Structures are given as structure tokens and as C-alpha cells.
Amino acid sequence: MKILALFVFLSAMISAQVQNDFSHFKAFAGDYKSHEVLEDKTLKPILKKILGKEYNHFITNLDVIGSVDLISGGIVLEGNAPHNGGEEMAKLDVNLYNGVVTAAIFSKGKIDVYTDRKDYKKQDPNNYMSLPISIKDWIALIVTELKYRFDKPTNLTFK
Image (cartoon, rainbow, N blue to C red; front, side, top):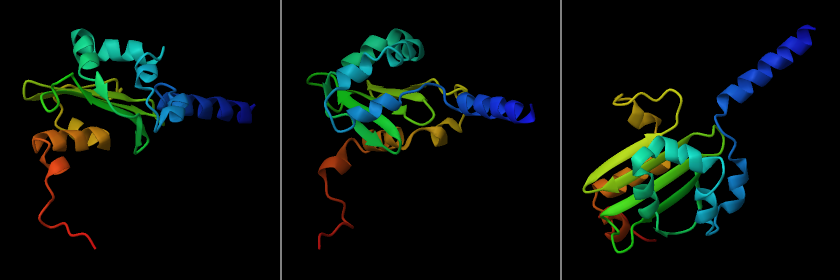
């Protein structure tokens, strides 16, 4: 009886730590099936909920998109609106291990981040530290006006 109770307790703990199961997204890494990711029956309602009226804006800002990437445990999509690279952009990180979804929109010089993270509190200064590395790196890229993608840093040498 004690073993059964322990098993039930551990099962509850494990399932409580995973918000959503996106493990099937691993198969998309390195592919160009971003549409399949965005249309996923579990992900799409989450995106609509966290983005609200900005959902269509987010989708438009992912219109020009590269491959589906796997970065630090997250399936990641990055794109921009047609003919608006550097001005209208979006990023999505879906964590494969804990199921947390994080979306970001860059528009009119401003970055807005949306998440379904359970412990998220709007305007909490600690939110930045909890962002996925892919989102933080994207924010850093935008803050530098995309320069580090094009300009060689002065302290970089090729050997």
C-alpha cells in the first residue's frame, strides 16, 4: 500500500512539472515544417490564449521564416513579416522538457513577451532571468539593431 501511495505521489509530481507534452516536436528540428508546429492542436490554442488580440500579428511576423531549430531544449521558430525584417519580427520557444511556451513580438521598436509559464507575474523584474536563452539572445540581437549578425566584432580573429 505504501509503495502504491509513493508511486501515485511521484507520478503526480512528474506530471505537475510538465505543463504540456511537446516531445513530438523533436522530429521537426532542422526541418522547415514551421506551419505544422504553429498548427499543432495543443500549441495553437495556447498561443491564441497567451497572445490574445496579438495572435494574428504574431503569425504575420513569422511569415518569412527559416528552419525549425532546437536550442537549449526548446523548439524555436524565428521570422519576420514580409519585407519588414528588422522592423516586424517574432520568436517562439516551446520547451520540450517542461512544456512552457514563450512567444515574443518586435514591433514599432518595442519587444513584447508572452508566456504560459505557471509562475509568471506580469512586470516582475525577475521575468527576464526566467526567459529561454533563445528569447534572450533574440532580444540582444534586436537591441544591437541586428549588428552582430553582420559586423565582425573587433575582438574576433580567425585562425
